[in-house]
Length: 475
Image 1 (cartoon, rainbow, N blue to C red):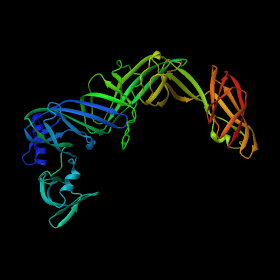
Image 2: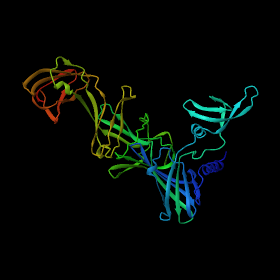
Image 3: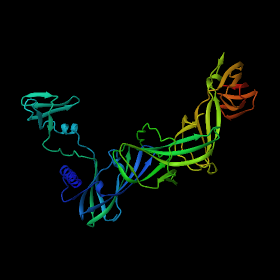
Image 4: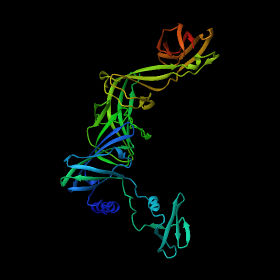
């Protein structure tokens, strides 16, 4: 079947389904009349589509059937403009038709009406035709009346005499327009659609001593809007756009193209309102039900800082604890400054950071992953990629005294055994509740917040180092 015949058939079907309003000239527009499309994708599972098409309109009243729009379009967001004659084209009415043809809906429309059932006779190998009435079409399937008898689960094909009114082959926007001048218009339809979103994925390849890294950034776009945008001008908005009703998140579980060579950055970044806009510098086709990845960042030899941190527990400070608290975890973090002199210095959108490092044989291995929030330039990124295997920490409460009805004094001992092949420095963060004060300590501490004390402890390799302190707490 050739393309011209397909377009004629589609036009015939739509015209048969939607009889024109009295006196109105009917025009149908599909992808064949599209001259350009721009898609702006947001983090919040929505996209703004600007669809330009060349459409010939008659003078006077016109009915425009704008087909091939996303199944998940937000109808209340639609606007239409004539870029060639904005004042000469007036919108009288707008409708969105989405009652699509399906076997279930066809049977629903024919409940109480006659259809034909075609069945192949196993003996004669001929098709036999039976006239039946659809009397129900519920969860178990259609129920037919043939003559005076009722049956279900009929194996034959169902043949419908005609297409029911208001069932359409694809979602369609319909406008009643008043046009002052006969001729071709360049029409731009702009609308929001759900089901399309994007996020960033970062690949960080660490050097041997974790002091430097190569960083790649990928944009991952997931399109489930129900439409394909061919050769689209693509823009991405990073930031939290406020909406009256948040759309349901839909993020595919994907694996980014890790450590694969990519072209130079393809996006140009700029400010937009309170957000950041990333514009792809070439057209791109975004297919329906597709996950697409495009490189946007590639920097080498970025300075990094590795940190070790152990976090205590709030409950440990609220009463008497006897015995040790062994196997305290020591988290391993990488800190990166998002500065120009560090090879970065651009707003980094929210996403997942995956860290890789080469093993003793030079083979690249996955070391861990974490997420980052939207990060402005000149700010710091801190990524946790795991727990230290060769560092043992044991916490112990050594004293607990009641000084008054609401005041207590407690002492703590934190033993660190470093079994690594190098010296490390560990930051201990103690979440102390209430009104508190450190009375004495073996290492200098700081009050980083109203509920946290921090101690930085040097832990030489193959040795045990002890941090001890006494705190007075009032609840």
